[in-house]
Length: 66
Image 1 (cartoon, rainbow, N blue to C red):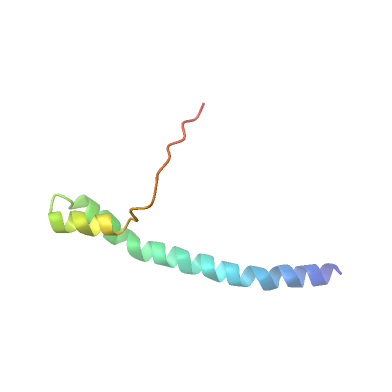
Image 2 (cartoon, one colour; image 1 turned 60 degrees about the horizontal axis):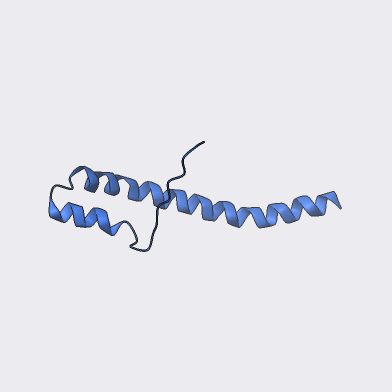
């Protein structure tokens, strides 16, 4: 029975790992553009490029430690 659990966990973990790797690769490919456009945002074209990396629907919440 333990072998079945290990097999099932492995079976369902592999696709999730592949998705995680793909996400990390995508983030790493976007990172230079995000920071470059931020560092050159005095240029309106670069500012617009930087803004295009973010959704207008995203809300950021600051949580302060007690």
